[in-house]
Image (cartoon, rainbow over all chains, first blue to last red; front, side, top):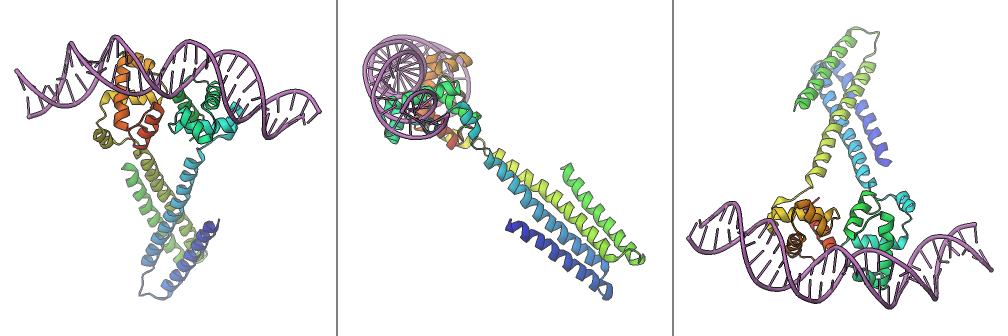
Length: 140
Length: 140
DNA sequence: AAGAAGCTCATACTTAAGTACCAATTTAAT
DNA sequence: ATTAAATTGGTACTTAAGTATGAGCTTCTT
């Protein structure tokens, strides 16, 4: 927001400078008006490139960051908080036992969560679960 | 390339139009010079935004597309063509048997490739292999 | 020609993954 | 307070994954 204000200020300043220059050129014949206009044009184009570039950049970054997790989809699938944790650890390549150790529960519990996840994601294997979950933006 | 030429043509045309306008304003007092300059400035800034926007856009897209596969890394790890195929199918969630069917070889062969891959990627499980391979840009 | 590397396949084995059922406990919602 | 959902855990079982080893075959290089 502050940056936007800053940019508009820049535009205004640039315009004022341009007006001053044009007035000067009209009263000082030693500097041709064409040269002044040319310089002004270059400055304005540069300014436009700067402003436009930043705008586009932000847009792209926002898009790539927004494409992360779809909470509605998770709810729609009925995936619980705990299941989501397990799913993320699966995607990191951990075994059921390792996941159990990390979450301080037994391997049996993890197996229950995993089986439940497979039903909700409609898959048969954990590798499939990972790709499917990324497809559906359940994980990143 | 053609687009670049087109853009520069646009710049030149815009400059010429601006010069004409400025000349006209100097001889036709009914139109204040300030107004002409203001309009010209707006046109130039718009042009700059358009040009700069496109440039940045291309840059970002190139970066996001370039971050795909690191062939040198694959060579460095000594991963063969066939192993790479198997690795990609693993990342898609296929079982050893399914991979064998898809590549018209036995499950035994796939197991051999998989074990070989695990050594090269320094992992113990196929889920780990996928995350490691993506880390190292061996697959996308 | 001989060796190296890649691809293939098999057997035998161990381990992890996944399924099916059941059940106790906790937590959140009605 | 009662129902429903979530979390936890167990047993018993089947299936897939992964390891180890050996071997035949092709291709490419030296």
